[in-house]
Image 1 (cartoon, helix red, strand yellow):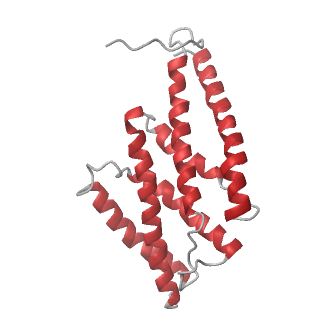
Image 2 (cartoon, one colour):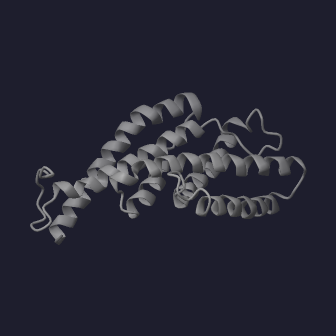
Image 3 (tube, rainbow, N blue to C red):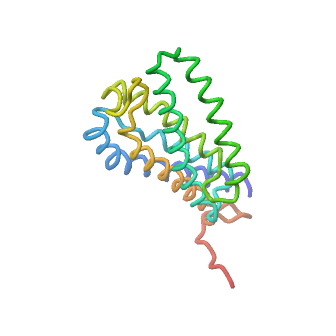
Amino acid sequence: MNNKGYINWAIWISVLSGIYCLVYLYTVGTFTSENVLPGYQIVYGTFTALPIYFTAGAKREDFWRYISSYLVGLLWSMVYLWIMDQLSAMGVDPWVNIALIVAIVCTVECALHFTVLSKLPFSVVPAHFGAISNAFWLSNLTISILGPGATSVGGFYNFAAFPILALTLCGGTLLGLICNEGLNFINQKTGKFQLPKPQQD
């Protein structure tokens, strides 16, 4: 594809991303700000999910693999944070706590998804890590606004906004797919926008 095609693709990506943000902020963002995290929204979680999927090719056949992997990554983040919370309640130094648990749980997580679970659709480990990194900062943000979760014994987690994060990561994956689909609307030789040609059987 020539430079004109890449510029048109950049326009496609940027315009669609802008529309996504506008729709998100008036729907999910508003709900989050008014009902979950007063005064805050987490649209930026989109732009963790999008590039991980996008740089892997954003193939249609991989869409549900990435969706399920982000959601499983969120579940893993809850394992990390729950164990950290228990050690925090025991008085373990926070930095030692975090380093130790990340090392141990990450080893277990990667070993499982690289081996016995590798053929299952939710084993895209980079997507896990993207979800986990977002979950860590979101839990901290939620604690700063609402305090620790009701079941927390060490003040180390609050999962109240995790359903919103799950929705946001799914939205980022969908946006990545739509961005990549833009190539079907660009002529690979001329770089001009065109209607996609119907696929022949």
